[in-house]
Length: 147
Image (cartoon, rainbow, N blue to C red; front, top):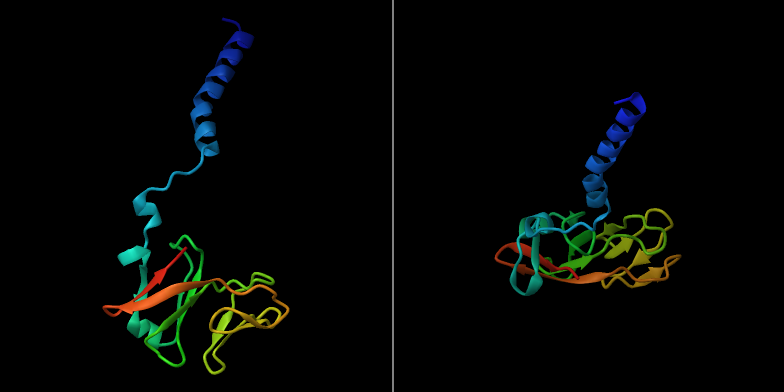
């Protein structure tokens, strides 16, 4: 076998052995139940994201593991045992809003947008409200129902 034939066979072999890797890289990811479930599921699709004692300290921030994206859970000013859950990503510039308990508002540190407890814009430049989610306390756990 001459050098050219040998290199051709090596090249064909390399391409053939790389094909499964290329196919796997291009295929859509199929998530298993263990990959997607990082918190325990509760009734009616609620997932536990923290404890009541964590919530009473101020806030709970969940950045991954729930299909809806990041979540910020804070106690309701009128009822510390009633959680409020929002997506903390500002709808104007994508910054993470901060909870201001004294004013009972979510404030964007980038451009000063403000949102009320229901996620509605109270001060621009943001024009869209923050997405909100159902949340409740059950057996000392804070449960949120992501989309």
